[in-house]
Amino acid sequence: MHDSIYQHGDDLVITQRTPVSDSVVELTLQRGNGGRLPDWAPGAHIDLILPSGRVRQYSLCGDRWQAHQYRVAVQRDPRGSGGSQEIHDQLRVGDRVRFGGPRNNFRLAPATEYRFIAGGIGITPLLPMIQQAEHLNILWRLLYLGRDQRRMAYRQLASRYSNQVTVHTSGHGHRASVKQWLGTPDPHTLVYACGPEHLLDALPDECAVLPPSQLRLERFSSPLADVPVSRESFDIVLSRSGRRITAKSSDSVVNVLSDAGIDVITSCSRGVCGTCEVGVIEGRVDHRDALLDDDERSRNDCMFPCVSRSLSDSLVLDL
Image (cartoon, rainbow, N blue to C red; front, side):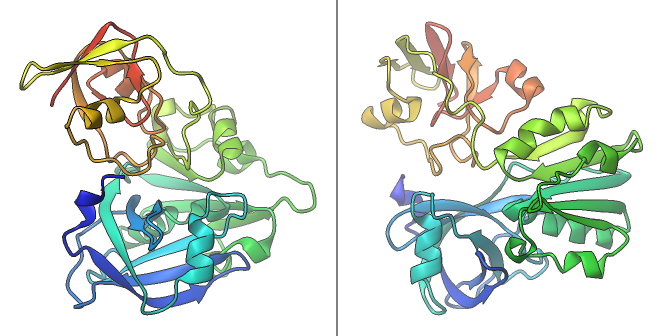
């Protein structure tokens, strides 16, 4: 983590802590002086820098028009690396955390109708989208999937919007048919989905009636994370100074740049948050992030150097 980006009084105070399911706690966060927070739009997330130094990304799930507070929901993950457990077990009302962002890699684009698919805690980025669709009087429907209703933090949506929300639990072994729920949507419909990898990996087939551009996914991790990256050494060329630095076989581009005294702001180190995006002027990128779609990768004009490397002998970056 590049701590320096968070050393400018970007503290938030936990003003409310609400359990919203057996495994999810919702935090309301404000500046200590009650000041206005940076604006955001549906799909955005912030970094929380926990007292331990861990940095975690959480989708903003509150009301974007409440300019003085953020709201996030955190699911306890006993198999995780400790961030969610620290929040659940140690953070209380009045405690402070630092933050970065907001950033948005999952923007709500104009459409005549929206279909939302949420798996478990993947509901959080979709909540402001639903609110936005309601404000704009745009048709929407939600398929909300989970193993057990007790773990589904916002299951009350089904009673509030009974004609628009379908809740399905798989606890009894019956899986939902996304294809059947989707039907044949209007050609200007956009589908937004967030949830576990097995759900998102299945959606291109389940939503085969849609062109790929109408299916927008928000992932918690990169599907390419376990695929070996290129291990050949290559040169990084900084276009503004002409400086040339060699990246050896196992170094990440971010680490190579950092060792050379060049700071690129990073956060997740997993290619999911978008913090470290840099422009690419020349060279072929070995993309390993979970952010770019096929068209964006084929343009080859940006990369996320916390995970991605080079397929060519050199990579000219806009740095």
